[in-house]
Length: 193
Image (tube, rainbow, N blue to C red; front, side, top):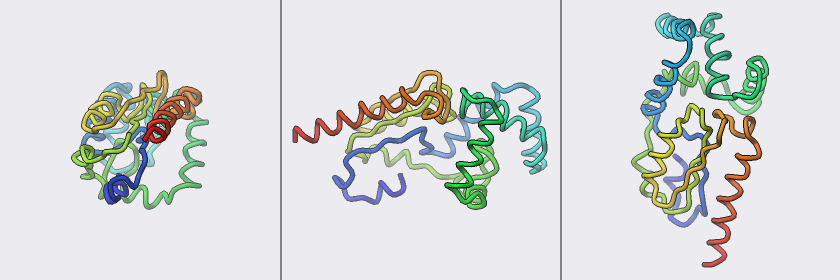
């Protein structure tokens, strides 16, 4: 979104926001609501880690890599496979120190400079076709994704049934089909022009 708002109108043909975080304050509100659905033990471990800033303790790690990941990130893999997969993706594709500095120690504990990030006011300026895409159980909550799409003039929404945040792992056929349908529509409309 940061890059997109600096482009000349017409320079971008279409956009897909996959499980987007377009407002950190809203993301925090949403993840806090989802945390309230975890077991009392997981909630207590998370609260204790946030109070003490001890995010390496076993209770916090179990809450994050067990309940949270299984409920909202990847629902179709066992917790150890999720931890291995996410750890590999982050190691290969991201600077973990930068991620922790800019965001924080977990998806729901935001302590970095991105804590105030909010680009929802720019959604009304997007004139190209926009696909908002997330999983049914995503931490990018479907209601929030729908609200953000409603702020965007030429938007559509695809909620992937049964999926968490990583729709491409939980429901790859459905996730790919949603993006494919959107791109085919955009391309066919461009051909007409």
